[in-house]
Length: 244
Image (cartoon, rainbow, N blue to C red):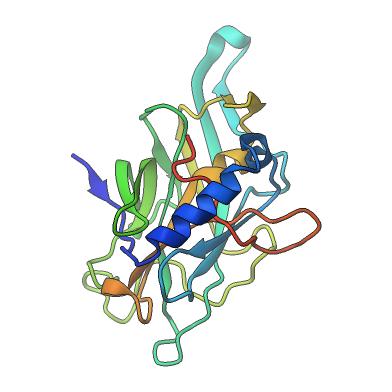
């Protein structure tokens, strides 16, 4: 059964196609050399953003689950990362928009992922997720961590205490926001070939938002906008979609 990440359809199909063609011309290897991830919503509201990063620096590697020699390698890895919701709070609803999902494209088709933390009831992991980025474009995510919310973004039984990550958090700084840790068969190398650092795994991130003003169904999706050389913020073009 395929689960749909709660993200928005939008009217940006043409703009995305042009941007992806331009960005694709920069070459795949340039996509793989990163140190941080500024995420921008692709919907028409232009009001959603996030910052996703590895815990300490751009060379953080997944933690191997093994004992003894190489023969004791389980093939499982643990990846931890932070998600900060850098969206501006709404004037009418300052607790919104909220990040309610974060998922990843990985090379191939793999499964067996599990959420290590946080372990409270607000978040759970699903595999084989279809994420809509526009009316005509979607990507399949190997897994996504989603908040336990209804279609409006509210947490069942807790209308005044919504799940998800609140807006107004600081961007560009590691360790800000919510830390997630996931175990699973993360690859040791990515196409290129390059080593699969956490930051390179984050290249395929898709962030879901709820409670977005002037957005269809109040939802939006965000992807990584690579930072141009010599700058410190998001670039003008999104990463390749799909990435692999």
